[in-house]
Length: 82
Ligand SMILES: [Zn+2]
Image 1 (spheres, rainbow, N blue to C red):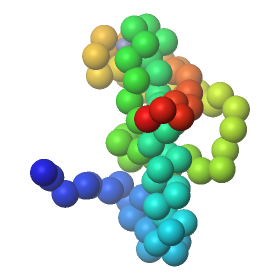
Image 2 (image 1 turned 90 degrees about the vertical axis):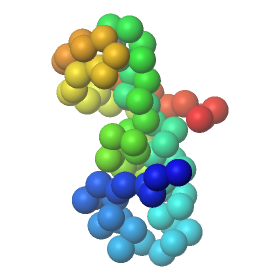
Image 3 (image 1 turned 90 degrees about the horizontal axis):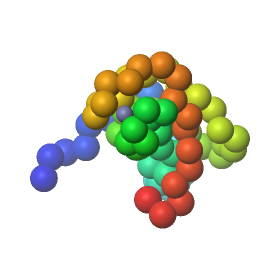
Image 4 (image 1 turned 180 degrees about the horizontal axis):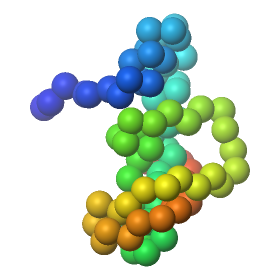
């Protein structure tokens, strides 16, 4: 088991937020997935070092897919089963 590595913005949030709020934010951030517009491969925003909390809608994020290499704008979808 490797220790979770947090991005700068995640470490900042952990410093600023009470532990319970940080845990809730991590849980919600893990539900948001960047979905490849090419192959449908999903990666959680949290694992990519991002934060998304108390948000709705379907934003898009620029990046490239780790699986098929499709680069461009991919939708961010919420997966409540995650
Ligand atoms: Zn892909």
